Length: 200
Image 1 (cartoon, rainbow, N blue to C red):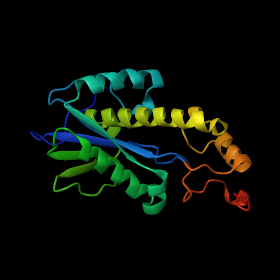
Image 2 (cartoon, one colour; image 1 turned 30 degrees about the vertical axis):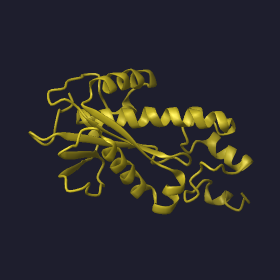
Image 3 (tube, rainbow, N blue to C red; image 1 turned 45 degrees about the horizontal axis):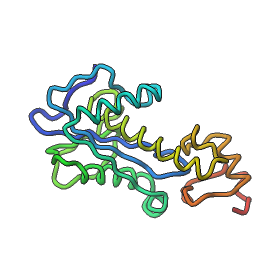
Image 4 (cartoon, one colour; image 1 turned 90 degrees about the vertical axis):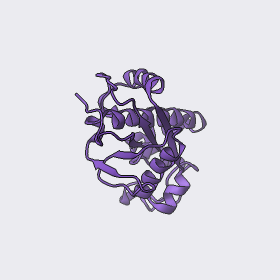
């Protein structure tokens, strides 16, 4: 069973990101503040859940959260500041957009930069340990999936509806055949080194 909070007695926001390992698309992050005594036994790390369960849980989170927000960093920004900094910036943007000010922040993973002057904790596999991080992982993942589905309408040949921008064989084959789009992250290794002689 996931734990309710890390910091006793503080209004705590859980943060997580989605899309860090993708070749295309923005990176998304979410910040969620849940009620102090919140319980939801269905909540878990978004990667452990089916798409149908994720979307059902998103509706519950949007209904039940004290506050929630999503932050986005574009492929152009990722190429300028690198994906680690972009992931942290997306979390900061999500925190900025919260309608309720948190007093502490807990983050999935092991890297974060201080947000304002708030205490924070980085928690490896935190989306499987704390409810608010699990909730943030579900929001970040589902809102990013919706965005990639929209991009797939514009560029159907890259199979983004199914791969969401991750480096699948089909995605890389489309890059080799069609070149890159404005949504690809140019600073990433879009094709394996042996195929990099291609002229994009």
